[in-house]
Amino acid sequence: MKFVVALIRHETNTFSPVSTQLTDFRRGTGGTGPAYGDAARKACEGTNSAAAAYLDLAREMGAEVDFSICANAVPSGLVTRAAFESLCDTVVRSASQGCDAVLLDLHGAMVVDGFPDAEGELLRRIRASTPAGLPIGVALDFHANFSAELIRHATAIAGYCTYPHIDIYETGVRVGRSIRALLEQRSQPVMLWRRLPMLTHMLRQTPSMQPMKDIMDRAMQAERDGEVCNASVFGGFPLADIACAGLSVVIVAERDQIEAGNRLLDELCDLAWARRADFVFPAEPVTQSVAYAKTLEQGPVILVDHGDNCGAGGTTDIMAVLEEVLRQGLEDVVAGPFCDPETVATLFAQGVDAEVTVDLGGKIDMPALGLIGQPLRLTGVVERLTDGEYTVTGPMFTGMRLSLGRTAVLRVGSVRIFISERPQEPNDTGVFTHAGIDPTQSKYVLLKSRQHFRAGFEPFARHIVLISGPGVCSSDYGLFPFQHLSRPIYPLDDDASLAHAQSWVHSAG
Image (cartoon, rainbow, N blue to C red):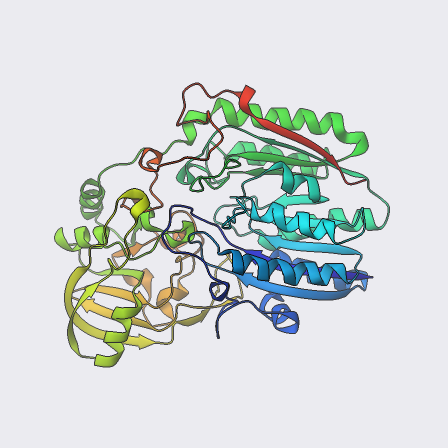
């Protein structure tokens, strides 16, 4: 028996000005571009990834593995056509050489120049190059956007049930369980899917809180109780100007469970739609949020600048929130990482203990939102210089070796500012501790994140203050010039209704 395994992940913010090249699909530290074959296996084995679960399944079943590619890029703008063709060709070539199943660890919200639904196109090509009926299992991010094409060509799909995403390995186990049952002729799966005409705000999506919590809890309970094989609720990625953006529900059921599967699908979708207004996040001015944080007496206080979060495609070089923190005089602050390779080079050239004046950030304009880069002039002392490498010890992507590129710490008064060559959402304290600085000992910790910070930072936070800074990850959807969404869609259109939902039923047989 032989499995083809592939990991390709990218969440595309179509409003980001930063295009995504093949070299951006890194595999942790060392070099640029994807890993292939044994290097891909080494990058994933023993980590919190669906691909690692596939490798464990293969060992249990005595299956040979062709690990074709490991390619993981930080969220950013459109993926170039050349990069996508290279990624696709690698997987299709492996699958076309013969196998018993293809097991994919994908994101589900990748947009390519020419292919709004990149994962759907990848599956279409795999299906076209392999024998009819070949099992294709797909693990997807909670923020996947669905078209009928993705459902049409997959055999079984499961999505993360958490946000921050700490159940990635378990999602691979769920996919593998369905594929194994099919291979052992114990299952005849059917997939039921519906996409609702609603864009949920990412700060209101997390299944750990309402309004999503009991929707996801109901799906997980149905799966545990055997009502269906798999039940997944996808919050969707709303910062993609494509026709298939929105909240979706996917049910994998046996043929004799279709009636129960449809009832569950209706129940979950009706509940989500009834709460659509609760999925809208109300923003407040940056000055007001920072002023409130200043009144909090006990730390650590986590300040979350979610409008410029690279985990959703932000550039992480917008300085507005840091500037306000400095203006209002907050003290004992650890902040970052801010991505600015030019400033990093300057600080490395000056060396530790040098007093320097730099223009930090503001290097990138965002024409889609009419934002012009505004650097922040700072004078401080170079406190640390590092290689930016660390191993994730927290619950998200546990065990993965990551790199910020070269990283410098600039101390401005009692504010320590981390500046890196590569963007990285701070979901693990390693972004700071690799430089010998413990964020748990600071009064304030300023992060560019949205929800993933909770994996590494929420456990020790006394307070969390969400700050609606500017950027291409803004929660104010009225700022975005959407042109390709399926309309009407809530909350942009008051006349959106369940009559505008899209559904699909697909049988693997």
